[in-house]
Length: 162
Ligand SMILES: CC(C)(COP(=O)(O)OP(=O)(O)OC[C@H]1O[C@@H](n2cnc3c(N)ncnc32)[C@H](O)[C@@H]1OP(=O)(O)O)[C@@H](O)C(=O)NCCC(=O)NCCS
Image 1 (tube, rainbow, N blue to C red):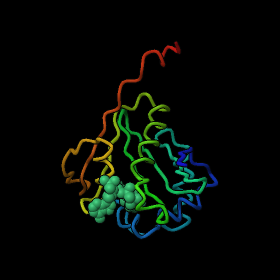
Image 2: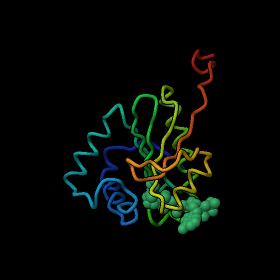
Image 3: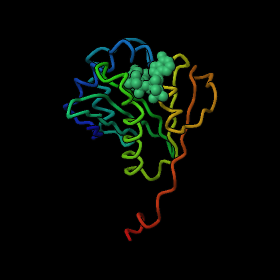
């Protein structure tokens, strides 16, 4: 069973291991392998930031991946990865979909989700296509493909509590 939950302080070690996985390093936009001390500082700051939401994906109660949303105004940029042991099983799109639903429920002011994906990251490009993200073209600054998803307006009955 697939579950997405809020990241906790105790997940820091797991996030560190995921961050330095070779495929994650290769797909990432910050250079190379991260040192443990730098990771801890970064993680503690992200965990308390109002501009960031982090989630853990669990598959049959095992930690299977991470999802992070960095918020800037009405837009959030998604960053995610699956543990190597859980790749190639079609879990990526389901996990991203579940995380977006949870994130959107908690952040009604965020109107769109953006993803930057290196052009050679075929699996991740496919994930966003499957989830009906629009392909916005190649972003020269990021040197990556840009995908975006406009979120549906929150239902007014939910806002009024009816
Ligand atoms: C990106 C990532 C989460 C994908 O996870 P995954 O479990 O391999 O993904 P899936 O098995 O669900 O595959 C996703 C789709 O890509 C397709 N795919 C995967 N590798 C492919 C390849 N080399 N060529 C063509 N299609 C490929 C799969 O067939 C699947 O499409 P389908 O459902 O239509 O068959 C995983 O590779 C990962 O953690 N990578 C490192 C971090 C990363 O790249 N994060 C994203 C940054 S934008």
